[in-house]
Length: 204
Image (tube, rainbow, N blue to C red; front, side, top):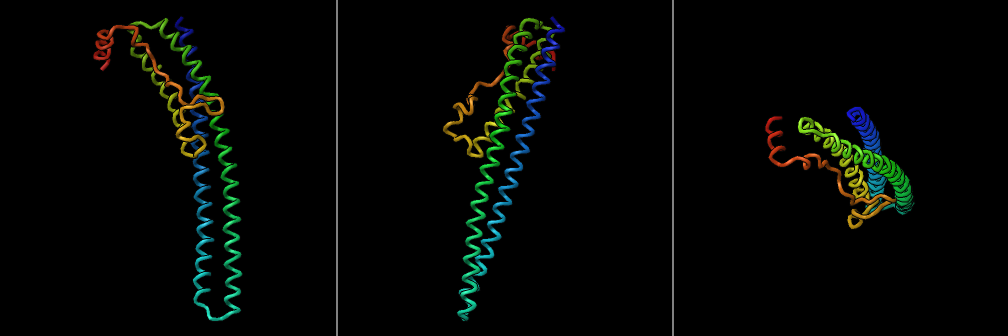
């Protein structure tokens, strides 16, 4: 029984590590999106600054030929701004699609991690003793927290990037229920409160 418990713990730990690796991919994708968004905004700001300068010079010129040339430059810059905005929007949609893909990847691993964790919880409940209660509870709580945090982080990213609206934040997205209950261990409920209290005092 103990070997089975250790084996199952190792399996869940491995799956949690896989989950955290995908979470890192989500973080990296978010960083790329934010950097690209900043670069896109800077490109537009640079063109707008050039346009403002041309418009200022145009208002001050007294030469018709020069004014026509400045008008042409201003129109070209305005066209460049509109084209750049269009390209930026297309790129943003593509990047958002990449974020959706990695989010779905994380949710797929999360689903497997939840399944394995629940089996592990049942194994711990079947084998727990008063002596192992504290350590077992800490092990399960640590695993559950990592699984929960990866899910919550990715859910918040989907909301931040307007992939999921706040109104739909507890609904189903791409087959994943975003409002699902978090994992937590009920191991200590198997013992009376006084016994648990004494154990916690002894462990301090």
